[in-house]
Length: 150
View (cartoon, rainbow, N blue to C red):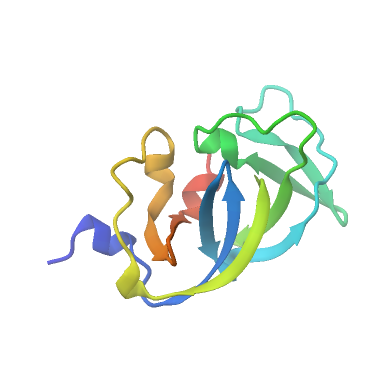
């Protein structure tokens, strides 16, 4: 019998690109990551949803920038603190995720995958696929597809 949690679990172990956001460690599948950039100039989009921080020019390509703090229900980044940009590619389209800082690429094993923690509340509950325990640190696996859809 397959449970909802089983369907959310990665099919096999793999690599996650990890990043920090509001003191928590998150990860996304490496195959989705196109590149990581330092803070980029954002062009605001009038009447856009709050999670859309703006647009960036990536070598002539216009890419939407999603503020993950907003999507995950976290407080805004401190004034004067630059975000790191993770450009992900989904279904042939590039989208950028704004995070606090980039961490390492880590190997994870599907057998270590667990349901999202019960303490996870609000909008983050729908965007986190589950968690991995890494040397005393909880790594939250972000559902990139859900994170970039408005």
